[in-house]
Length: 484
Image (cartoon, rainbow, N blue to C red; front, top):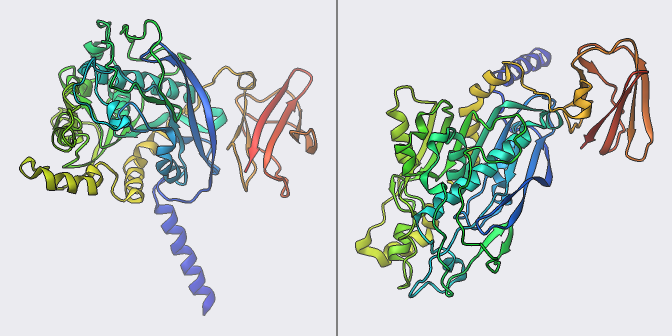
């Protein structure tokens, strides 16, 4: 009697797995490529920053996978790409290729503060004016758009789909991510990002501090550092390689938009990405509705020192964005996860400051694993629709791509990669697999077809870098592959 029961269980399990939406279940191991350079750009002081990202790749057999680009927080002054590792790991385990990026930080300080807070990290929070925060968001947006174009140009190497792309972030990074998704027309460029009068000489009691690629920077002001030039187009200048920076959706963890975004119709543009918005309603750093960042902490919890929020712009938080989206004639897909908490009561400031301090100012993600699961479920049907409408992959013009060959997945694990041919070569070709030391594991001569060509897998092949060589009298193509 056991055999029929086991067969029935097997059928039920098969049906259950088939019913699970793609890219929602954690089922893959993953590997990460660290500190890949995606470009360089001039920061607010006129210094050139080299920009890096980490790339998380699932060990899945899919040849076209969704891409998620993540942006960390830190008041546009601090933080680093590793801060988003938790979501990278969650989504890579579900089959996403995930990039977490560093971007340009920093903004000009006020000329004088009578009584600043004594902690160096707070001394860096006094902005010259409200324009500085908006300019910082804009620079970050330009960088992340450049990173997206860079990643779209290497879809063959990463087995990704360049029209199934999401962007997301936390806090300051969520402001940047929302700008990436919504600020897509020249007419939407904020006036603050045009040429402005020079910034003031910062007060000697303030700290000119920011991070670059996770490392603290406290530079002496170079000549011309206070000039505030036009920041250029909404697309920026990084990696203008023929790919666009459009995205299918945006993830915003306690982020927002500058108040000008509503007046300039960022939400009404031709590209309306789907939005996932998370916020706690009493957030003390980024307002849930409409307000000034840091207001309750700066105005009431700064231990008697000069508040730092006065020169910050007013912003719309995720709650206000959700209301605006719902009122659009044709709203994009929207999922909100808003958690209620008691608003800061300024009449009880002493006790409220203790409560907010004990609760991280309510500026954090509740149950990260659940949020990742909900994000995956929300975007899954949209991604499936995009992945099912070719062409997912666009030629990058690299030498091996021009020859019309690629390997996927790359990297690979338990199953061999397959060789894709855009056009079948005339006659038989010679194929071989070698490692980085030149040791050959197999070779064969065969006729290739247009499309998928299976390759043999050496069961005892150790992890490492390998080369597949494709050759005949007319060509020689060498493709890299990594076994994890």
